[in-house]
Image (cartoon, rainbow over all chains, first blue to last red):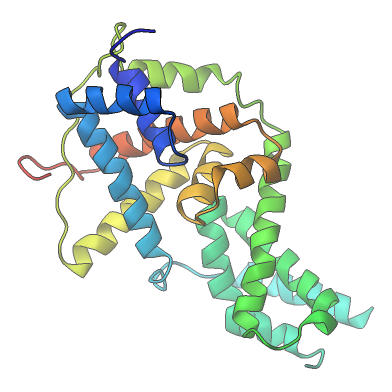
Amino acid sequence: MKWLSTCKETTELASRAMDERLSFVDRVAMRLHLAICENCARFARQLQDMRRLFQSETTADDDAPGLAPAARQRIATELQNKLDD
Amino acid sequence: MNKLDAHSWLNDHGDYLFRVARRQLHTDELAEDAVQETLLAALSAQTRYAGDASPRSWLTGILKHKIVDLIRRQVREVEIPRDADGEEAVDRLFQQDGHWAEPLRPWGNPQTEAELSQLRRVLDDCADRLKPVMAQVFSLREVAGMETEEICKELNITPTNCWVLLHRARLFMRQCMELNGFAKAGVA
C-alpha cells in the first residue's frame, strides 16, 4: 500500500466517510492527506456544508412549486375511479 | 374516517407530498406518479389508518415507500458500474497523477435567510442536473437521510456501486455549486 493517497483517492475516502465509519487504515490515510492538502480539506468541508443545507431545507421549502393543475385533476380522477369501484 | 377524505387528502396535502417527492425524484412526472400512488394506496389502506398519526405524517410514511419503489424501477433500467461517461467526467476533474485539475474555490459564507434560501435553490437545481439514479440515490442519502446500507438493500445494488454513485454525485454537486457562483474569495 502506498503511504500517501492521491487527491482523487482522498475524495473517495472523504465521500465514504460521510456514509460509514472508515477502517483505521483508510482513516489515517485520509487524515494525513487532508492535513497537507488545502483543496481536499475544502472538499471534505463542503460535503459537510452540503449535508447541513439539505437537512435544514426539508422543513422550509414551502415556496417550491406544488402540484400542477393538470396533474391534480388527473389524480382526482384516479381517486374518484377507485372510489366508484 | 369516511371515503370522501381521499379528496381532502389531495387538497390539503397534495402540494406538500409533491414537494417532498420532487426533491427526491427530480422530475415532475415521477413526483406526480408518487403522489398518485400514495393516495391510491392510502385509499386501499384507510381501514388500517388508526388515526394516531396526523393524516399528513401517515401519508408521508406511505410516500416514502412509493418513492423507493419508483427509484427501484429506474435502477433496473440503468447499468450503474459501466457508466463510462460518468467515469470520464470524474477523470476530467483530476490530473493524470490524481491531483485536482483546478484548485477548489471556497463557498461563500451565507448568513441571512435570503442568502441561505438562494443557496438551497442552487443546491436543488444542481441535484436536478445529476443523471437519474445518481440524483435519486444521492437524495435518498442526503435529503431523506437514509443509511447507505438500507439504500443498497432497498434498491438491490451493491455497496460498491452505491459508493461510486455517491462519490460521483458529490464531486459533480460541488463543481456545480462552484460554477453557479457559490465561490467567493477569502471566505471558508
